[in-house]
Amino acid sequence: MKIAVDTRLLLKDQMDGLGQFTFEAFKHIVSQNPSVNFIFIFDRVPHPDFVFAKNIKTEVIGPLAKHPFLYRIWYQFSLKKLLKKIKPDIFVGTNGMIPLNTSTKTLSVIHDLNFEHHPEHLPFTLRNYYCKNFPKFAKKSNRLATVSEYSKSDIVKSYKIDSSKIDVVYNGPNENFKPISATEIVSIQDKYTDGKPYFLFVGTLHPRKNLAYLFRAFGRFKKQSNSDFKLVIVGKKMWWTNKIEKAFNALKYKNDVVFTGRVNDEDLYKITAAAHALTYVPIFEGFGIPLVEAMSCGVPVITSKVTSMPEVVEDAGLLVNPFSIGEIAQAMISIESDKQLRAELAEKSILQAKKFSWQKTGDLLWDSILKTIDA
Image 1 (cartoon, rainbow, N blue to C red):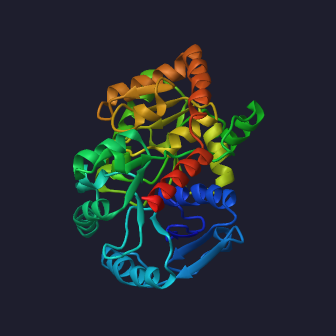
Image 2 (image 1 turned 45 degrees about the vertical axis):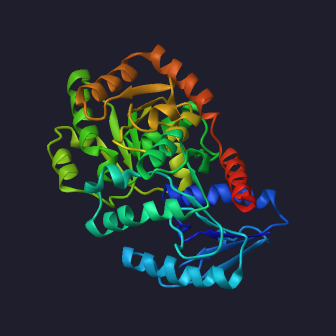
Image 3 (image 1 turned 30 degrees about the horizontal axis):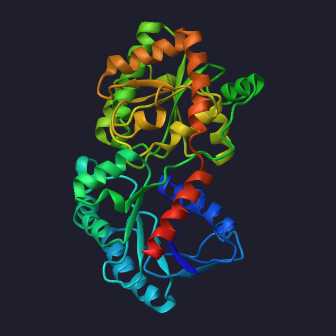
């Protein structure tokens, strides 16, 4: 059996959620199927870390796909030509994009449709490409996979796809996300927050992540609680908009906000595990990997009661209206002041996180691959 995989988003020290999904799921799938030949397809020379087994062969095709126009060339011309040459049993489009005119069977992993619901958060050329082409990708694919029941329902409704054609495979936390000792927590606090406890946000600093409301809620929390808590923001300022900038500049307590930028994996594990709570209140998520990472550490979460987030967290966190500064701030006050509540949520978090793992993701995605080949 020969399986071709879009691994274009496997970028050393630069992976977002889609790249993380691809790496973790296929690390498991490849190890469990040593007799299967995997062709990992890149748009640049891959880092050796991504060629992690003997049954992986790599193909590098151009151009470097950094723009919607180049996406079209890479997927609809270069990739189509390669698939015709190597003749795999299936092509897995790990970020939802596939060649539209290929005879190769395709499984498209569409993580979410945020661009359909909030196109205002993307540059014109990118949203135009997504909104024009993803309905075609969904209809052309022999089968689809996605990461939550919410996203499955959204794809069915938005693109009129038969639900039996879509498999839910979820996301998972890296196994290194786990509780740490009180001594380690103190060490992390000393390193990042001058020894103070902190709320945590992890993710790309994008309008969809709702940082403007988080900053305002943190300001209200500080004013009402008179607490010495800080807010740690982990992530790259890729989409730092005027609205986010304005909300931050208006914050009276901006000196209590710590921006770490992107951090390495080891630091991320520890920063997450040392947090008093995760404050992650996006307006839209297909899954929300930081949620299961925090819960795996026994860290309570405050998150939005919209899209996929209630499905991922259930009763293991505090669910809030992401557009209510008062609700977000009150959740912060509750977790800061009520030790019993925090302890209960921490216990529930660990149990809830056990429902998700990259091994489970790999197993479910493998089942979806086999269904596609056998169809």
